[in-house]
Length: 89
Image 1 (cartoon, rainbow, N blue to C red):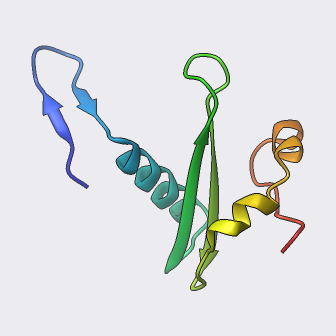
Image 2 (image 1 turned 120 degrees about the horizontal axis):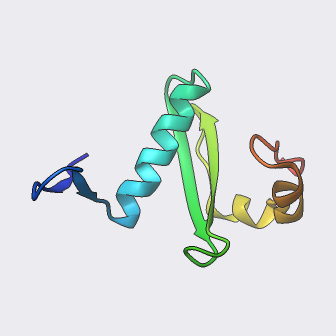
């Protein structure tokens, strides 16, 4: 992943595009879950500074289809937080 880095003075400033943010989220969460090869899809919802959130779908060695986002129960995610299994799979 290439970052645009600006060194004016401390602290280091790193500008990330939406794609880089999505890649960073999916790679770090997959590493946290000890996944080897994986597929991911990331959607970012909300308003920055108000209710911004990201939903990350991860599957090991399986393709993820965009329609799987329609199966997400956003109420469960809001209520239960991280690591909510997709009960509609």
